[in-house]
Image 1 (cartoon, rainbow, N blue to C red):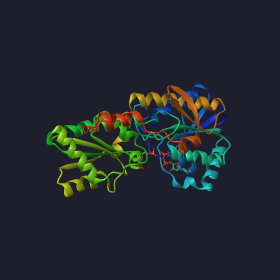
Image 2: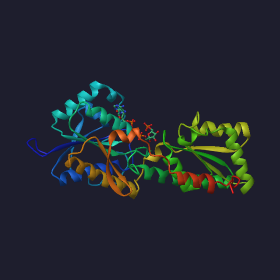
Image 3: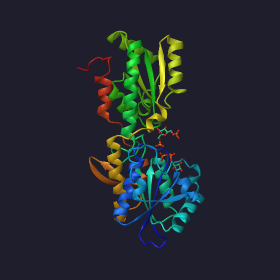
Image 4: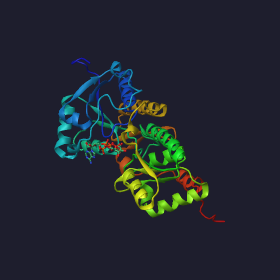
Length: 341
Ligand SMILES: Nc1ncnc2c1ncn2[C@@H]1O[C@H](COP(=O)(O)OP(=O)(O)O)[C@@H](O)[C@H]1O
Ligand SMILES: O=P(O)(O)OC[C@H]1O[C@](O)(COP(=O)(O)O)[C@@H](O)[C@@H]1O
């Protein structure tokens, strides 16, 4: 891009936890921008880069072969100081000094709160692209990264099942999703887990060790000795899967092993679904800029591209799929509740 270029200049950044498919979204943004005659400036390390003026131009050649990799080539960060008013003012000044007229933020709900905060001080267009493994953004059926995280968790759960079966053991597998049980629910169903503990379910019926032991024993009574695999969303038990399995062993003499999947869920090749979703949403973000939109997130709802007000993405909530919950609890539960009829 030359100093004398008069093309519209847009900014882009990846923010919050990296999500598989962010590179595919970046590639789509850059290719679409070039297609429509725009220049792209990428801020490195999310909002940190916006505040520190850490930026690079991005061209098609820079993103030619990145969509098969997780992480983000422009790096991501959590930037607590961006919540301050002075930070938003500084970011606005930096964007204006670079003649940037629109900013694409690829991230989760926190990143969109940040984008909204920035909009109080900056009059350029702001478009969000949903990038988080947690799938906890209202307005889109799936976020970029979610499909890959579920596939990784399922693969791990299948492997755990082999060893759990061989030794008739209980396993507690901790998956990500601090506030949302989407990864937990889908990976539990996809792997045939006997039980799942999700943040949304904890509100009505918090987990107790006694209830868990009762369920494990009942499953054994129905099926005979064998494996029992439980999916536990993170932060749902003090000390997590490790503490819970230690308690089962110590207090109930029940052979139990913990497994924490952690950041493994954010790495490796993104699934085809995530690459395609990211590609479609990245292009849509640029096309929304061309249409003059601002303060919206691009999403995919029932196969249709949509533009959702940024504020809705965190003030409203997508519930867990009621039908999947019903199937897991009532039909796939080895311990049948007495029939209602
Ligand atoms: N209320 C807020 N006001 C301003 N910036 C925010 C706010 N909440 C989050 N951010 C910014 O967005 C970044 C990413 O948010 P975070 O919650 O960590 O990840 P995610 O975007 O994946 O949800 C934060 O580190 C901060 O820079
Ligand atoms: O990588 P960090 O900073 O330890 O954060 C871990 C958190 O990030 C996530 O992977 C993604 O969350 P965000 O999309 O909100 O950043 C959560 O599932 C997890 O709780």
